[in-house]
Image (cartoon, rainbow, N blue to C red; front, top):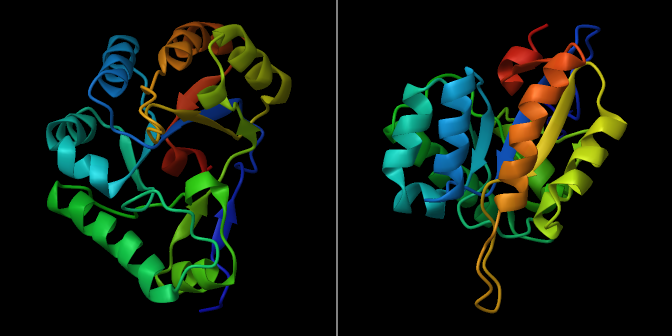
Length: 211
C-alpha cells in the first residue's frame, strides 16, 4: 500500500458512456426532484453526500439506495481538507462511511474531497483506507450559475467517452443565502434527453470504471 490513493478523473474507455455525479447533498427539495426525474427516465447517478446531511435526511438516502443510485463519501462536514490533521481527516471519512453502511450501502464507498482538494495528509489517509478518489473531467461550476444553458455549454464542450460530470444538488449555506439548485435541475432535464441523441448513455461511477 502506497501513500497516494487511486485518483480517477474519467474512465479510459471508447464507449460513449458518462456518469452524472452530484455533490453536497442530500437536499429535501432538489435531491428529491432529481430522484423523481431519474426514476421517470430510468437513469442511475452517483451522489457524493455529506455526513451532516445524511443524518438530517436518512429517508432520502434510503430512497437513493432502493432506486439503485450510488452513494459516495463527501466527508462529514464538508470542510476543506488542506492543512488538516490526519486524525481529523480520518474521522470525517470514517464517520460518514459508517452512516452510509448503517443505512445499507454495500461494496466500495468512493470518496470525493470537498472543493476537489487533497494534499499530503489527506492522500496518506485515503491510501491507508484504500479509498478510490473520484474527481471529474467536466467541472460545470453549476453552483455559481442561474442559467442552465451556461451549465450545458460547459458539458457539451468537454463531453467525451468516460466523462465524469460534476454537479451539485445541495451546497453550503453562507450568510443566510438560501441554496438554489434550480438551474442545475433544469440543465439535467435537458441533458438527459440531449446526450442520448449524441449517442451517450448514463452509468454510475462504479459501472463506468469497470469497462
